[in-house]
Length: 447
Image (cartoon, rainbow, N blue to C red):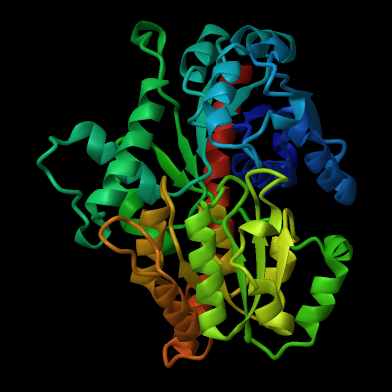
């Protein structure tokens, strides 16, 4: 495709403030720029430095992207300083405050659109008011879902189907515990959507961070809108980041191939004390090497929340790191053989990209559905919960052993390789088809 003929079209890309939304949106921006579009990337100051760093490392992007600061009102809550204008690492109780602050930015975003006058708006579904604002400015709109088609299908089902009708994919029916948590979350998100239907215009297309190879049946089910997969938007490993955890990287390099599990629950999950204890004992019982990155609720908690004597007992068998680690770099390391994860969609795609089987410990939101998807395609195991939705150390240890040294370990790695090849085979074509639709909308906007 000759992308040069499209140069000049300008896209306003508005991801949600959570880094799990911002990161794949930036990868989408890169693909659009590579095909000849100019991107206004709207972002909060708290995420700005992270994206600026990525742009500096890709000098070819600098002339085709403009970062537009999307600042939240400082007066919204004194307990929500600017550095917390993202869901990365903030306590759950502040997320509602964050949503309220975002709601107050509508006039500011409207002024930005008026000044920039882009040819197209691509927005995150957590900004549903763009379905009103875009048409008000006579700008075409498209939606970008950083999650998957499975959660879109599930949301469609609970919105459009009677309560007594089951989700039409039996393997993906949730336990009462998980369903109650997910339905509560989806109800909350639905309540934020505007009721001003008289001025509401649905997006012309919905772009989804997925592939037909992995989610074809869910893309077909979610067919009441023009849905287009754009492939798997995964960040490349940042080899410079290894310097920030040099001791851990050196330790990992001394282990055997596929012998170590990486344990991480993403940027938004704060584990409870009981959950931390069960994971710690599970790792200890498994007797496998591990790297565990963990967030504590406060400085007072620190490592004291770990079981007494845990660090002394594991000795050189593992590493516990508080805060951030270069996840993509670690997952890409040949000595990592399994990934204990909450199954957020970004982490799920990274495990597939870097060939690491998943040990699924879904906590809430879309994560239980993602775990079932991994099980269906044979690239991970889910840790069994009890009837109250709790994880136990014995089940955690068993899943880790099965993935690292069990009979199914090699089969899972084989299935990951097969699925990854299927995804890569059609990745460019999927993005090109979506891009053609984007260009048509841009032409409509500039016309």
